[in-house]
Image (cartoon, rainbow, N blue to C red):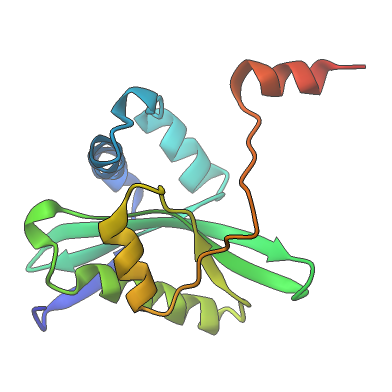
Length: 161
């Protein structure tokens, strides 16, 4: 890893770059057809509503990776945590320690903010990422299953009497 790695939080003018990173990640995860986010929506939810934060890893003035995260809450710990929604490093910069550096930075942010944990999901087929996370000491939460209600099902449930 180069010594000149730096981090910066996004600014409004970074919205197109954020969307590019999201699409690049979705392409890698074979889920590009599921991306419906657009620049206006990202600007509203990241900047106007302040529901997520985005951090760029920058090398020599080039954004080489990003992390999108937000606070969640653990009732058992009685404190907030950080939930990492997306972590992506551009292919040409992988294997150089930037992914680990991003996670270290997020861990430092979590500790600085008094958070009790840092967590994320990973696709079951993504062995390179799983191996990487395990090498950092991350523990898979095998006793838990993720459930989701979205789209029309979410709307229908909200409208039930």
